[in-house]
Length: 253
Image (tube, rainbow, N blue to C red):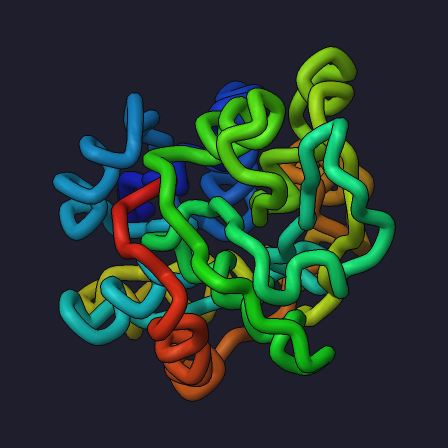
């Protein structure tokens, strides 16, 4: 049996890394590819080491890096998990609709592709913020908005949903996107694709039909896996130019 290492986007492992150990065990047993999960402590380590892994579950911008820089082959993505944005406001901000962001100052993590999902949603409504300043991470955005540094912010929906009630209560939600345009995907190193890619795809795409497989998918909040193509990943690039004229660039996670 082949032996592989798997790394996962640190945001997805932050809450419960055990579920990813269990997912790796599922791949080992049902896809006939011995898989060992390696937990990266943060994005710095993940970005340093992801090109060493045989399997990588990556966010949209890292997906482009794996595909274009390192030649990885995309395998599957989930049918229910997409990267979306929650628009938030300070508690004392007079905002009940997205139109309040038109001409206003906002905050986000501008190094993250999902911020562009928010920009596109606003542009589709004819809404243009005056500026989108950047913070280093999503928690810093929430904290800054709650403290009145800026009236409005864009936050990754998965991050916001994972906050406790106290943290969520520090800001108000104005709206959420439902673009379903970008997503995390599982990649395999090119040198292993021919020998193991098909077995992994087949096993993961059938997992929802099996009780143990379904339990493994539920652990990582996936309803079902479907194939993902190189062209689908490359389509993410269409978002990269969104908001370039109003963003102050700074990396974030």
